[in-house]
Image 1 (cartoon, rainbow, N blue to C red):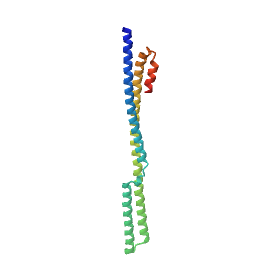
Image 2: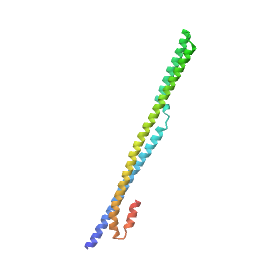
Image 3: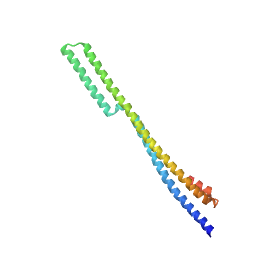
Image 4: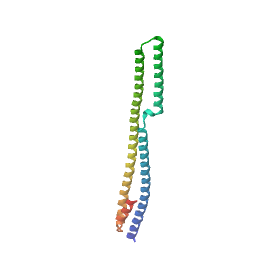
Length: 174
């Protein structure tokens, strides 16, 4: 009876390990699915934000509109001074050229800010991606470690019944 009791005890223990392992595996699969969802959301966020035209943002458009209006006023003032004071057309042309250069500098500054913005987005995306990839690696390592331990425990007990490979195959399928 001692040998039979030992075999039955091993079989019951192995069955408990199998069913506990199935539950743990399902929980780890749910965790992995949540991390994969977070990775997709991170990728979608990055694609949306990285590919937007920085010059079309409301703040950039407001700066360009204010700069253009200011420069138009300066051009009108220069033309008015030239008409009233009898200045040269060259002076008005030089003022207009200086104003055009100022507008180009404003647009260039916005483009430069856009490039820095993209660099920051990329850094944030890569940091988040690395953290999520690390989470997935941890989940997969936890699953593998658990199944290695469980496989060794159940394989030894089940091999006494000649069913070790069937149980291990079932565990791997779940």
